Length: 169
Image 1 (tube, one colour):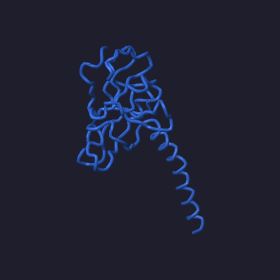
Image 2 (cartoon, helix red, strand yellow):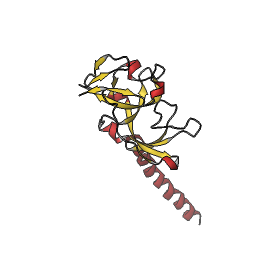
Image 3 (spheres, helix red, strand yellow):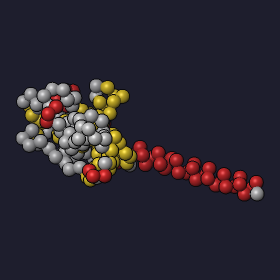
Image 4 (cartoon, one colour):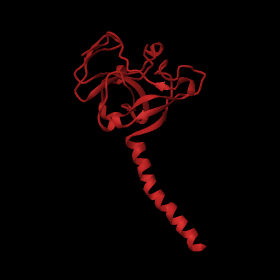
């Protein structure tokens, strides 16, 4: 019976040796779950200040393939503090011209993007986005946000949206 038990342990250990790397690869390169902090993406994400934070499905394969489109909501490293994750909408890519909140016209360099929060109430100056730090290297983007998975009442895919009149392609 000892032999049977030790075979069982080795059997499960072998499954773990195979499963763990597959799981880690999937989580790092294909998809994972994320939690949205703050209110800069309100009303798209975290629309109710008193409610729980939105949990989202992150499409990491888009980052692996550099497959970003205008209007995608993205998770990226904060260009001012790479320890911090931020969530913003990609409104322009290399070659596009963007009208900033201060009405300047900025041309986004190739390999860069212009990312902004959706919260109109916070746009007066307290929001940290490309209006603060300028165009962002696309290499800082780690995932696009596919949609909300929690709370269940908000379950669904996010829409691609670009602010009207702000981007000249």
